Length: 214
Image (cartoon, rainbow, N blue to C red; front, top):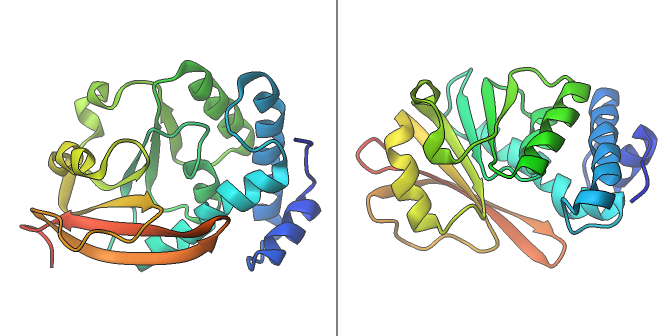
């Protein structure tokens, strides 16, 4: 995976239907270039080429940014990104969606080191890494307005875990490869969006506890 230039990134994004401004192209090139370098020794992601990483992984982040803008969230939400891995979708997401305070939660030390290194170079504001299990997050981390998860755990276990963490109007957003089930006991679906991706469509589900949903 060679290091791309901002122009390389902007051209591929445009072919995927996303126009990037100069800052976005520069930041994504920095992220993808650093991912390329670290991936050679750490196997952070399966994509061997930066083009595949952008098309298969980073593109999810700009679709997610569009989805989050449509949700009923505070102007400055507190967000937890569970099982952040190599910073996907969270780090590219912060290039497009800069609202509030964003915490990437990851227990694996090499991935924590990678995320902290790349964040230091990208200088994304109010974006930090918590290198611990979710159960070990300090009490000051809660409540939060938004929880994000991509394949962190089965959705029913995830909802049971995060429900007590949310503010009265908080949301949990699940990234999935299928439409949501028709019913979530104790929860209300507050938003669903699908978008084209390599291998088929992907989806975002937004859910809030039924007792607090509008």
